[in-house]
Structure formats: C-alpha cells, structure tokens
Length: 192
Length: 169
Image (cartoon, rainbow over all chains, first blue to last red; front, side, top):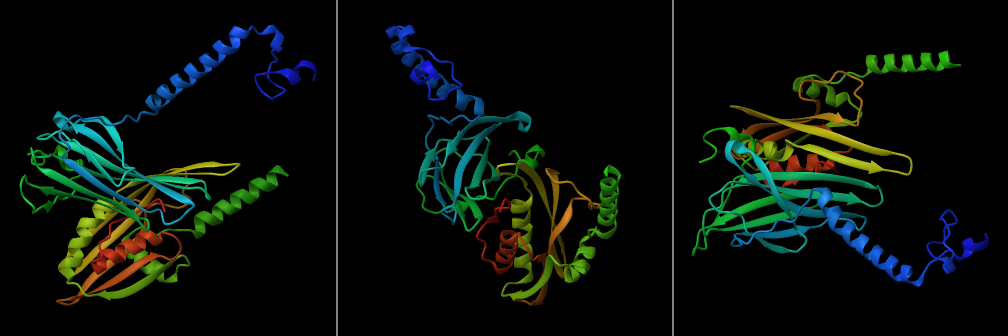
C-alpha cells in the first residue's frame, strides 16, 4: 500500500494518491472552497435540470389549498403537488411552475380573468416494493377578480379527491366548480 | 440443444396464442367472467334511484378513469417501467347504465393475445332499476388485484363518493 495509506482524499485504494507532503497547504483551503462552490452550483443546477420550477406569484392569494394525505402505511409515502399552467390563445399550454402541497394549508395566487390549467399530482412510493407511481387530476380554472377559491385535496385509502369551491367577495355561500378537462378547451363554447 | 429450446419456445407460444383469448366486447366479457379464475360476478342493491347511479357513473367514470398511469418498480436485478392507459365507457339507456373499464399497456408489457379496440376489458358494472328508490348493480370485476378500482365503483354506486381510485395501486 505504501503512501496510499496516507491518501487524504479517500479511503479507496483505487483513488490516485496525493502524498500530503507534495500538496501545498493553500491547496487544502482552496480545495475545500472549490468543493463547496461546486456543491453549491450542483444544488442550483440540478433542480433546474429536473424541469420543475417553483411557482411564484405576487398576485393576491385567491386559491386556498387544504391538503390531507395518508399513505396508509409506514412503508409508503404520498407526495402531493400542483402544477400550474397558463392556458393561452388556441388553448396552448405553458408551464408556469409547481407548488408542493407539503403544508396542510397553502395559499396561491392565480391570475384572475384568465384560464389556468391545474394539475394535481399524487406521487406514491413504496419502500419495501421499491415501486413508484404517479396519478394526476387535471382541471381548468378562470378565477374571477376578488373571488375566493377553496381547494380540498385529499388522499386516503388509495383514493384521491380534489374539490374546488368558489366564494364571491363578502359572501359566505359558495358553489362547487365542476371539473373542466383540457379536451373541451378546443371547443369554441368552452372558453367563455 | 439450441433446436430443443426453439421447439419448446414455439410450442409455448402456440399454446399461449391458442389457449388465451380475451373477450373482445363487453358482452363477451360478461359471459366469460363467471368461468374465469381471476374474475368474478358480484351483485348487490343500492338505496338510490337508477338516475342517481347513472349520473354518478357519467360524472365519475370519465373524471377518474380516463387516465394514463406510469409505474416504475426496481429490484437488484431489474428495472421495470409500465405505462397503462385506462378507458372508461358509459352507456346509458332507459333501463340500464353500463360502465366499462378497459386498459391498454403503452409500454412495458407484451401482449400475447388479440386486444380489443380500446384495450382489454377490466371491469363492467351494470345498473338496472328495481324500484324508484332501489337499483341493482351487477359487477363483473377482477377477483385478484385492482381492489381500489372495484371499491371506487361500489362507492359511486352506493353514493359514498369518496373520490377517485389511485390506479397505480
């Protein structure tokens, strides 16, 4: 083994050894800094590469999301999120970002007077079976100005449910919105 | 030795193609289920009007079952990705409401028998009026697996609409 025992980089024999006496002291400091900077860069770049971006909006928080998830087992996990897409002219879809529904209540600002396509994502993972699956619930919404939208998102006993209620300003009565699939978006009557 | 394996494989394939034939229509599925090992018929009554049950099937079927699902499973030696598309069909006539559920593997599974248009039949639920407040449900459904789907359809028939089944389960 010889000098390999003194390798400061790693305990693996396969790693090219750097005898400590040959490495200037400055390199230790600079090396550590470089590693920190590199890790920082990787941490920034990786989420960008995944294609997922956090939805940011400075608009009034008109969408109030209450989330309850229960995987039903200690060996599995459910993660809920909502992807927000802008629905443009001719029903083109533009991804705007994702909100992870990790907290029981989350408030989101969705642009009023404009169609948005919401995709609620339930991602399940089982540690024992090493199995993952994703199921989605999609709907379109065109919030009215100053209206409040309460969204109930639940996952329990392998059943999921998403309900959106619309409440006019200064009112306590609300109505449940029917799910609107993206498909009918292309019909001229759908985008009123 | 190689010829031996080829002969065995060809014989097995012939047996598979000859013996396994899936129902090509909902009616064929109804007839095949009572004699099938992995499926069964379940009949029950619900305290709801026929129109209520039919409306629920019409609403929940497309909302919950028109899905494409991707599952991945991994072991030490394998990595499998299966993509499945489910297709619900609702047929409502004056005295019968039918919910058909079909599935098609887009990726990860090789089919060895002829697949019907829209995919293999997985479940058929027939609702028929018994009285103004009672409806009879005939459920032709798998007896192994797909428990979440079966439970969801029962919930919809009963009026206990607790949501959509996670078809990845």
